[in-house]
Image (cartoon, rainbow, N blue to C red; front, side, top):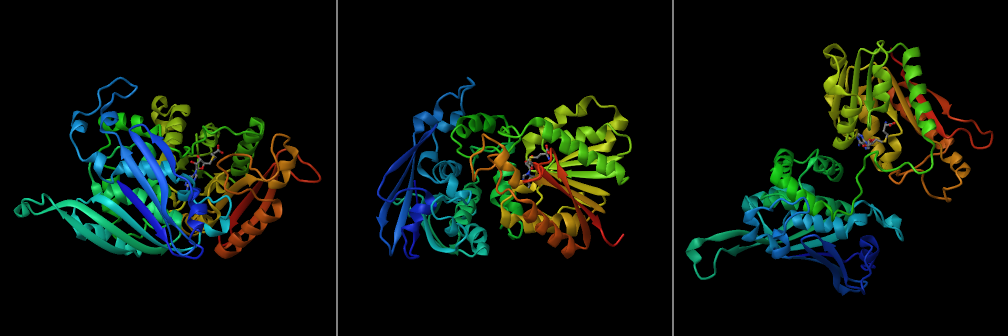
Length: 461
Ligand code: SAH
């Protein structure tokens, strides 16, 4: 099946830069169950079309997974090789991963520019027909054109099939279009979903961050997207996810340059500050594998401890490290781990004396910080907030770090001291907090300490 994306924004060949695919080349990417080809049927400065052709191999679809279990029997006879389904989402994330993640090496200034974009999906199965299709795409500003196909051209009385040729037009950044297709194609289909797993929850939150929250069909989208969690799906997941180009955002990604000691020091400093300020309830936001939670749990002064992270896998590891299942009932009651995103208002985060964000903000794209600020300082609104982040000035001290690169491959930015302090001061002023700063780690007169901490205290208490 074919997905084409066309733009007429001059020079239209910018589409090639955004997709990281040269218009003169045909490129092929392997998926376990087939291949994805990307090519340009048209590439002039007036009009440029990129085509993604997903060529699934029905035989490979039925092969045994490396785990040894038989794959689903029904995969022998189905429409999967011929329609845009969750395999199309896997193909999008395989072939267009940088574009979907909002990265453009050569023309970064184009990433957030709204382009006039036209998408065609040659065969899209839609469970719910044209009304459903419109209810998914029109609230997001798409102009939707649909052509339906009869079930069988020889037997008109059988009526129309659930397959459509769909054209979608919108004026949005390309990354947003790809994210919306990634989520909504399998939602239309609503058939067995070949890549659903715990990580999908994170992906949905990540991909839907700017539009899903306010979508009128949000519940239906989430319900359909998350469907069929089960052992069969898991087998399929193993098979498909090997092809996934996107790295997982867990702490398993190695920290390349910082010494572990520095991180322990940060965590101890944070705990000591919390003790000093005599807080008793703490929400650790972006708690990762629960290192701070563990330190806090050791002190009886903390009677309520919440760990929140967007990564389910990290929370699982946190649970294991904290030995939650073997903890005495009384201890266990103090601790709670929840999955959530700092980009969405969340009632579960209110009512705490303090919130901590240890090395979290630099993992968010800068345009998302505004949402985080509101979630933490306006809605959760604890009396005290501690935020730590790396100090970019210190990077020159790391020999292995070449200029212009970050300490961790998932960092979206790294701030100097003046940058962090300006941001924190502005946030404090806007939300009625006062803020003080503290260097973290070995001090250097020229570049400061490797990490930096801001302590916000609510001004109106
Ligand atoms: N605070 C931990 C982990 C830091 S790594 C520690 O100091 O050890 C950054 C963490 O932020 C990761 O676990 C990542 O999953 C989490 N994170 C990234 N974006 C997030 C978001 N939008 N909401 C909640 N957590 C997020």
